[in-house]
Image 1 (tube, rainbow, N blue to C red):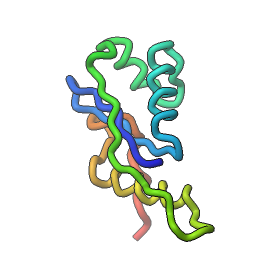
Image 2 (image 1 turned 120 degrees about the vertical axis):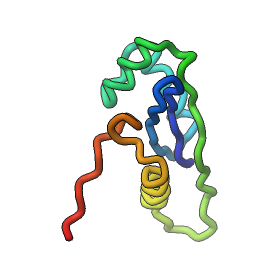
Image 3 (image 1 turned 90 degrees about the vertical axis):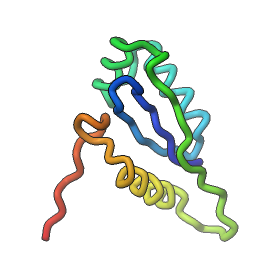
Image 4 (image 1 turned 30 degrees about the vertical axis):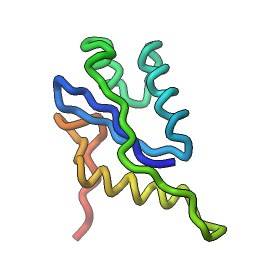
Length: 106
């Protein structure tokens, strides 16, 4: 389990995600893109169709080791880890495939 990225190398764009099953998530994402079935991020699918598979890489950014203590909320742990990578990579607008974060109320 951990956080992954799909990188569009020619345009410098990135998609960040997380999963309890990294190999399964990356295989599913690659399959959806290859078979024109990725609906959650249509801009990623459009770029994939236009640029081809060789323009993209699938990377594991961070692995979350299984916790030693029982009762740990793995989903929450993954959300925190993914949020850290989102903050680091800022994959919004021209830099990525995610919508910009909501502005925080001051």
